[in-house]
Image (tube, rainbow, N blue to C red; front, side, top):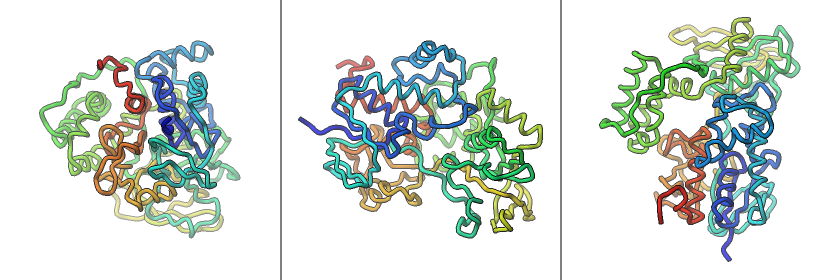
Length: 444
């Protein structure tokens, strides 16, 4: 009898892998998650505010690529929405947990614990326990955001700089005269702004990023994208130019939507220098048009902006110093030369998840990287993997017994942070580990 597959991380990616291993009659599995209450939910679907909605309609949120209506049918049993509904993320977390419970049997073991090392024989937990493994899959999710340049938390009063918005109450103890500065203007900043509003914070929120771009809203009635689904006869460097030209003619929304069907293949076919150019010139516009806001969320954000309680600004932090019980931020507006002071009661790091292994404090990933069992991808977006999700070690060798799925593989795929991409990746890996490649019609 062989040892099980050990999955390190019980969020969305790890849970889907475990579910599919069971569906395909694969090997026994052990799902290890450091926070037991986050099994099947992870950070994204453990959101505590009802105002935090999925940014994709229910029709696109099935856990399974081979059963597109699974989530919509689940909603129907609870009278909780339809295919066009943007449901609360908390509700989606319940769906994932119930889906796991529905297929779980003696072949799956759930363990609450913190994996601190991985070797050929299995995994080691922080409390000294060992779990034997035939193969191991890293499904650790995103790494926390890095501290932005110009910010030194050690120089600031306690509680005035929040590095993890998901484990804090950013409006606690503040009044209507206070200002909260969000460093970042993407989806994390949107979530924190909603959280502040829901908690009763009556002060001002200022969200700052280099370009000041905020996510766009979903809109109905737009014409479908006309992009080709075959690889074009130009490299990604040419696609960058075409993308910008199309955006100038039709807008970034149409340009991004036209490219989505072939994004992963284009990325895989491009070298590191070309990918770096894409990130430098296109990524900010790609992100805000690719990852959109549910209309009710966008309405609430617009209301906060119109009331003057929320502002988005483009600029860069030069330095942050303590000032009384708060902070003074010296920042430079975009396209400006002069540094301006900005006084705030609290700063929240909303720069979003990161993946640079060379800067992480995660014990497991630091240990594996130091030993050469894993390595950063060339752009330091995450862990280097091959097309089969096998981890590439420090010598450039793909390891059959160590794999990685989820956002930490974005360096090789780019589009692997949303449900449709991760569910396919988990499905494919589960088929391989279960020797069930025939599932899906490929034939024997």
